[in-house]
Every structure is written in structure tokens, then in C-alpha cells.
Image (cartoon, rainbow, N blue to C red):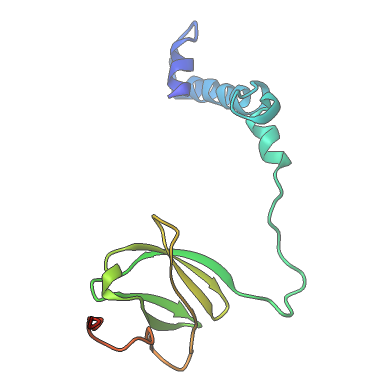
Length: 149
């Protein structure tokens, strides 16, 4: 929207696509490299803020490399979430009480944590058994028995 407003404020509207592109290039240069941005620290330009951020690069040492990732998902209607590890699909039991809950899977090699995305509550933590397709919760199946008084 800012570019449209900036274009409308120009004294002469562009007559050709080439003139429009020249004006848009000027806008990008002004917006990113000259104009300080109010929301950035010390009113830096967006280009200066980007250049100051650390950049990811290729790792030269891959020995002892650990596989880490964060994945968003939703528990299915049966209380299970699926995860692909080393090209194989694994089903992780969370429990029907959490059916259709949006979750984050925090994966550190075979150590998996399943967290409720809305509340941050840890729903399940396990070491994935790569020989099993289904990772059970460890609880007996069925409803929780009522305690007698």
C-alpha cells in the first residue's frame, strides 16, 4: 500500500510500463536504503537492519550432526499425530482427549516433545522407537476407571 500512495504523490504519473518500473525502483531504493524506519531500533533503514542480522551458512563440520526441527501439526480425530523420521512414517499416540488440537512437535533426533500450540502445555514426550510404526502412550486403552470412595 505504501508504494501506491507514494506513486499517487508523484508530480507526473507514469505513461509507460518502463516509466512505472523506474518509479518503483526509486521507491524501493528510498524505502529500503534511505528512509529510517520508526519501528526499527535507532530508526535504522530496513536494509541496515537486515545487514546487521546474523546469516545462516553451510556448516563445514558435519560430524556428530544432530537433526533438529520444529513442526506444526494437528492431532487427528483418533488422538494420533504422524511424523516422518528417516523416510519412514511413525504414528505417535497423544490421546483422544487432545483430538483436533493444534500442536508443535519439537524434534531433536529421536527425542520428540509434543506441545499444545495454544497453551504451551507439554502433551507428550518420548524417545521414538524407529522399529515401531505406532508409538503408544503407555497408558492402558479405554476410559480412566473411576475411583471408589
